[in-house]
Every structure is written in structure tokens, then in C-alpha cells.
Amino acid sequence: MHAPASEHRPAPRNTEDRNPNFVYALAKGLEILAAFSEGELLGNQQLVERTGLPKATVSRLTSTLVQLGYLRLDPITRKLCMGNRLVGMGMRVQRHIGLHRAARPFMERLANQTGLTVSFGTRDRLGIVFLEVLRPDAATRLVTNTGQGSVLPLEQTSIGLAYIVGAPVKEQTSILDGLRRRASTPWDTVRQQIERAHQEYDRHGFVTYHRSLGREVSGVGVPLMLPRRNALYAFHCAGPASGLTLARLRHEVGPQLLATVRDIRAAMLEPAARS
Image 1 (tube, one colour):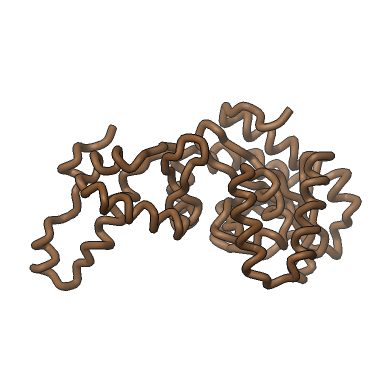
Image 2 (image 1 turned 180 degrees about the horizontal axis):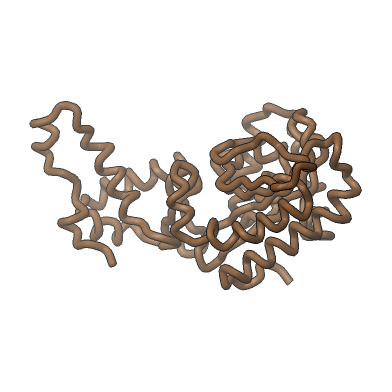
């Protein structure tokens, strides 16, 4: 239950006068972010009521926070929710929805079964930020050096491609527009890679990428949409390309990761995103 508006309202204007180090505009923006809780969708009027800020101020702040990725506009309800950039700044935000707790035992099992690194993440602008990374206990293992908080390009990793193919159409369009403008890789190459990812996902339910990023890493990715929490993630199983063939990814690791993500979805009591 939220506190009344008077408890949410930023410090009075004269706080700024008393302390020149107090940034009033920043305080108001943080009050907007603090008004949100797990999986919640809020309109500007609700934010006005919760923060006590003027409607025009709330409108300007939410527009800015959406552009920066700290808030996200739900395409159906036209209301706001926590954005992935805000999520990536603090792992505790993710733990509020219980995904770390629900996913960890399944991820540990898969890491030990395959001898590979298992992780999940979500989008941060045109990158994928890793929120959890688990490695196998076995001495004979194929692991990567990616850690929690690492950010890799969406289009150059199997986990990033899995996020793209699992995203709603409007979000996919936004991602593609951003990738086209960035042009760090020839656009035709990126477009073809994403088209192949869609085809593979439609056939098998997962996406593979062999020798991604020039890092000699290969992996497979599976998206996980949590509709009740209005959140999209992608799971990843990866290792050094020298010991991980494309055939093994497609015939062994991919199906295992897909089954793992289904188990995690069931543990979260979420409906299946696809038949």
C-alpha cells in the first residue's frame, strides 16, 4: 500500500535554498520512480496523486524518463511501468518479482548438466544486461567470463536475439530503428541475422549464435515473457566456441534450455507465451 501524497512529495523548495547541493529537479524525478512497485502500471494522473507534483511537471518528467529507458510505456494501456534501464541499475528491483529465486535451482541444474554458463538478462537500450550468471561446479566445463551487470549488443549474441524475437511488435520496431541508426555493423547484415533468428525461433523455440562478437563464444537463447508482471527476459546457455559445436547447440543444449525456461515459467505460475 502506498503512502499518501504528502509522504511522497519531494522536500519543499526552500530545502534547495538552505542546501545548495540539493538538486530539486533530480529529487522530483526520483519521486516519480519511487512511486512504482512490482509490475505496476500507472498513468500520469495517478503519479500526480502519489507524488503531489503538478501535472505538467509529471508529464515532462515521465516523458524524459521514458526516453532515457527508466520508464516504459505499455502499448496497450498507454500507462507507465518500470523500464529496463532502471531494472539494470539495481538487481534488487528484479528480485522483487521473484525471478531470481524461482530460476536459480533450474539454472544450476542446467549448468551442471551441460557444463556451460547459464544466465538471464533483459534489455538496456540496444544492449542486453545480464542479471544472473551461473557456472557449473564440474571441473570439466566450458564457461564464459560474462558476469552480472555485463552489457552486450542485442544483435550480436544469442541472448540478445532471443530478446528481440520475444519482444512485442512495437518494441521490436523501436529496437530495429535504433540498430539501423547506430550502424556499428552494416544494416543488411544485422537485418538478415535477426530474420534468421525469427525463423529459428519459429521452428525450434530457441535462437543460436555461433562464435558471437568475435569472442569465440557460442550460445543459445530463449525469451521468457511474464505477462502478469509486464516483463520480458531472455535466458542464455553459452560456452567457448572451440568446445561447443553448432550441432550440439541445436540438438542438445537448445532443447534443454527451452525445457528449463518452461520449468521456470511454471514455477512463476505464468501462462505459456506460445503454444
